[in-house]
Length: 424
Image (tube, rainbow, N blue to C red; front, side, top):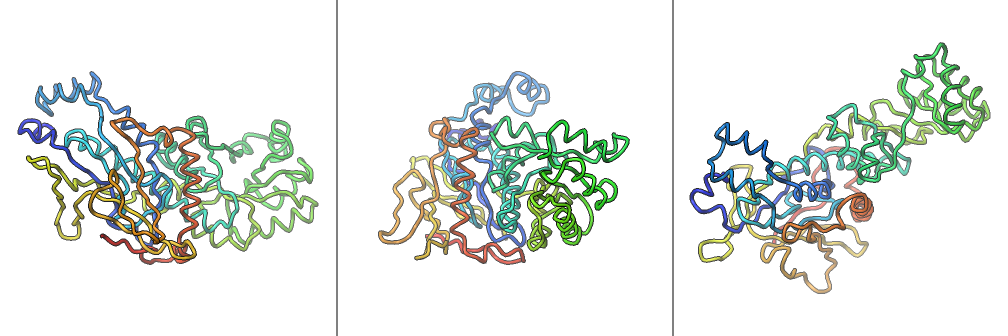
């Protein structure tokens, strides 16, 4: 596209692209926007270096003139969007990029791969947090996804309300609290379960978490308390019929005098199994596969469409796709959420007109919360959204935004979006 547009002179038309989701993954009532902070850094660093240019040239992917343009590529446009951690609904204008056509269209895959994955993880994680009823959840899914997406998933889950991750690189890069426990391999390494427990307690003290289901859970609990004492920090259970097993372990710990020893479970959990454990004496959860795969929805379904461009006279022209079941809404947009008297969200309003760079025409006296903020200006990212500080801010904003959702948003059963999206 860039090659052809450069050749016919349309590449430098000022254009407006928008990332949005036509619908939510099946059964979801809301989504959580995550990936923005990572995306802004990726856009800032997006370059074509000599090895890439040589390969493109050798394989005749584009003309030599386009290679020269790519060699000088820097994004210099403007980006607006929903704050990271914001909840969204079908049609929400999550990200708007204004630049020349060539500059903006180059970012399509970068935008969608980042937002689709991170938002999918965050949306699944938020559902798990809501049914955990305040019990801590750790992200432990690095072994169930690729090495790079593992770090992104840990960040997304943390923004969505998870309390820690087992991925140390995510801790180093994004300032996320880290945690970890021993695996079955550590127990199997030793001549006995007792020897393994003694080694772990000697290294980390009695407040450590001992994995008690390598052999027999009841014997494992007895050995753990005998080795660490009644001040044992926690036991971890990774198998079995969890409601029954957890209840039995709680009774056994209390009977042994370890009344303050916590129970954490980590056995292929998702939002449905966590909800099923709401009445069990579980103290914390560790979630792996389901969170890093979006709990059945590995992509958030976002698309990236051209919605406006300037014509030869310099006027903005709305453009839209009209394909059956894939139609888009053209035009520059702004958005706000209508709240009722209890500050509960009731409607997503999308205003077609000036766009986020203009003055929003919100009616005086109405409870409308503006949703779009500037993210990049002239190719420079707003530092408030970057790094560990931006990640912490996104986590805090997610908590605030979730407080506005109506109660029906938290149902796990199939249903429509929690609030409607209307265009004005």
